[in-house]
Image (cartoon, rainbow, N blue to C red):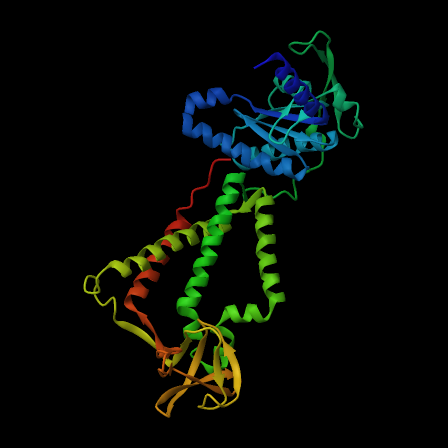
Length: 432
C-alpha cells in the first residue's frame, strides 16, 4: 500500500480515536491462588470456581452502574463513569464473597481488586489506554481480600467516607515516577448488597439473545398454528363463541388499532429482551422447551403426510368430532344473502378462507344453501355451488365439514409435549 494511503488511513483512525478518548474509572479483579486451584482440582472444578465467581460479581457490577468490559482469565475488567460507583462495587464484591465464606465453609474464593481513574480510548467492545494498564498494576500490587485505589481515584472521593487509608507508594512497571496508593477498609462499610439478587438471573450475550428471540418467535408461531388447526374448532363448537373465535384474522382486520397494539407489544418485548443483560432461568427453560415442542410437533405432523395410513395403527381414526359443521368459504367476495335466493339482499360479503358455523342446510331450485351464523342470533344463507351456465363452468363457493381430531394429531401432540419437557428439564446453563 502506498505511503500516502497509509498516512490518510492513519490520520482518519487517529481522529476517530481522539474522539473516543474519555475519562473513566477502571476496576480489575483477580482470584487469589486460582492457578494452584486449577492444578490441584482439575479443569472442570477450576471452571466451576470461575463461574461461581462471575455469577456473584456480575450482578454487583450492574447494581453500581458499571459495564463489564471482559473477563480476563480468572478475573474481570469493568468500567465506571463515576469513581464512587467503582469503589462501592469493589466494596460490595468483597462483602458478597465474605458472605459466601460465612455461608459455605467450602467456599474459598478471595479476590484482589485494583481501581484507577484516568482517560482511556472507549470503544464498543473494549477499552484501551494507560488507565487500563494502571488499574491492572494496582490489582497486581494487592493482596487477597484487598481493595487498592490509585491517587487519581482517591483524589475524587471523600477519603473519610470511603474509608481510604494511604498505604505508601510504588512505581508501576513501565513507569518512572512512583504513585500514591490507598487501601479501602471495606470491612468498616455498612452492607451494600442487601438488595442485590444473586443466582435468580443468568447473564446472556448478544448471540444468546438472538437465539432467545428466534426460539420465542417459533413458539408463538406454533401456538398460533395449533389454534388455527385445533383449538378454535373445539371452542367454536358453541354458537356463543364461534363469532369471536373462528376468524382471528378478520378481528384484527376490522380493528386495526388492536393489531397495532399487538404488533407494538411484540416489538417492544423483542427490544426489551435484546436490551436485557440477565434473564430468569425459568424463562430460558420455557423458551428452550417451547422450541423443542415446535421441532418435534412439526416433525411428527409433517411425517404423517408421507407415511401410508396403515403403517401407524389407528392414525386416521377419529378420537373426537365436533357437533357442528363448519363452512369454509373458497372464493373472495362471496355474498351471504338474507334468504335462499340470489335476488335477496346481501347481508355480508366474506373473503376466501373465512370459517362460519353451519346451522342448517336446505335446497331451493336445485341449489343447496347453507344457513350460517353471522351475528348474535342472526343468520344468513350462502350457496354451496353456483350451477354452470352457458359459457361458465360450475363454481364451488363453500365446503362444509365437521372438525375431526385423529390419532395422528394426538401422536404429534404427545411427542411434542415429551419434547417440551425434555427441553425444559435438560436446559443447560452456559458458563458465565
